[in-house]
Length: 114
Image 1 (cartoon, rainbow, N blue to C red):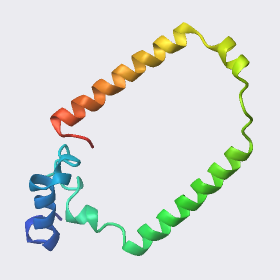
Image 2: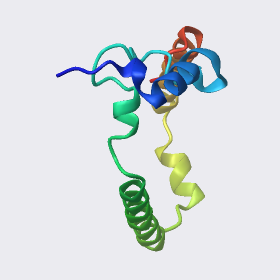
Image 3: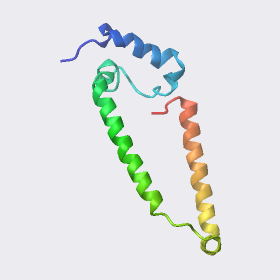
Image 4: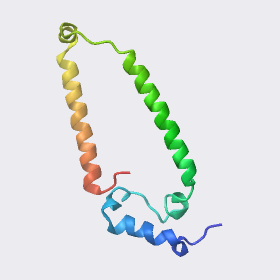
């Protein structure tokens, strides 16, 4: 049972967001013509009330976990940090940073952030 999404009031808005606005580059890689891959049905899947409740619940859990973890941290002494620091770790971190930068650059260049 597939309905035509072009008759839906949000279809024009989704088309405008996808093709003509500044936020279109965020969802440029999503094929909206395939059922289940976005569009008005996807936007209206959850009610606003459920979104607010879930956002508040996850925010509360995140703040509680952040508070708990900050209390259990202990400061690192600078002498210990220099002893454990190795050149291999720095090189690996540099390589990971370059690869991550290349991935983000490719996604920005192709306008497919999602």
